[in-house]
Length: 483
Ligand code: FAD
Image 1 (cartoon, rainbow, N blue to C red):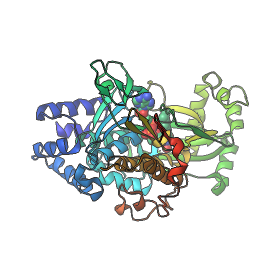
Image 2: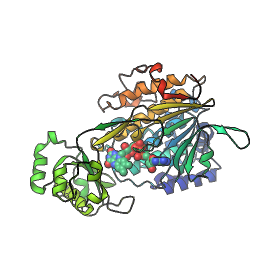
Image 3: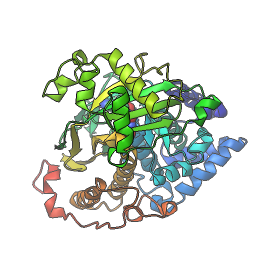
Image 4: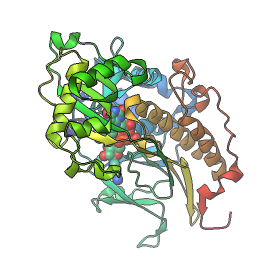
């Protein structure tokens, strides 16, 4: 059963096999010390499990986690089982918190491929990625499909004891109140479906990892409006033939560096791009930034509108022309060596090609807020795309998302300390760290990836933990009594 769990490729299979394993072993997802040693002992006969647990032990034994008991009193709710939600779940679990994740979807179906910075590859290897997916970043490969990444992280989270509920959507944050029998209830969530047991879960740390359409209240967003930028993603079936394997990837040919290529592409096909990336993964994945005039000339956009939302509206995009455009650009840039005939299918069972707008990008103004009602405190944080929207063609999304997940877990660690620090101190440190995130590149992080821990000081070379002082973040501490 464990071997099947390790090789399972869908959310349904992973969760079903995990439930079966737990039922057979008479275990229930729980805090690390109450789950992980038990599953480890019960799977002592599986060499595969033991090899994996050796990796987990190496991580879990790091002193930042205080033997998995440093957050023994903390209860965390995480909204979203995307890569960043799962990554923060793993860290909070290692800290010994009770961790519950809600995911509104019941499957993982994103073919699109994420570029991984070197530290992310090292991080995932240390979590046993190769044991779940043998092809993980083999040789010089530095990318993975979003679906595959979610599979790996979900398996790690579940084996450590994280409780995950699929098909459950977070709807609203509920303030502490008095229950039907006079009992004092803490912070809870209104979820859909309404009667789901998660609606009874009381937590004191909440992480919004629900992607770019963040649903948590209280976080203002800054908009970065650049010049019109439209990206096309396209996934073609990879039949893994020798011929396909021999075609080189394109890891990002910026226009300024290769004007000749893009000029030629335009002359031959009428397609005008600013850049194009090709990764060979589960699919043949292409992402390209296209210029408006060529989308209009090639009939992808039917009418020219100044307003981007109207320009890219469903009614204004000819999907057949879009497929042709993507196919032509992909063929040209791989010198016709790939049989790019059949598109892989997306979530809706349609050819996986899409046009996205990157003209306006959003970032949250702050990464954390503390709410206090009737003496009950709640630390709220954003991570991943909810916190800082990435521009996919430059491949920064997942790496910055992972950094934010680690930073958020670091704040949960401070939050769970006994005695607890003042909320303003936790927020001030979190905001000091957040200031660095948008500037991070693979080059300006610490080089010794092996030495990375949850402590942000091991990752950011120029970290000033007190760059933001507590008195400057008072507006992020929302308390029902005078502070
Ligand atoms: P996501 O991966 O978006 O995960 C958020 C999760 O939260 C989802 O599983 C969602 O179902 C769940 N959720 C949302 N609302 C709720 C709710 N109310 N309750 C419960 N669960 C909820 N990046 C690239 O570099 N290249 C690409 O080609 C690319 N393509 C993408 C295509 C799509 C359609 C999307 C959405 C994102 C794409 N990205 C791409 C971005 C990339 O996926 C993210 O940067 C990366 O996955 C990290 O994101 P995350 O975990 O913060 O959020």
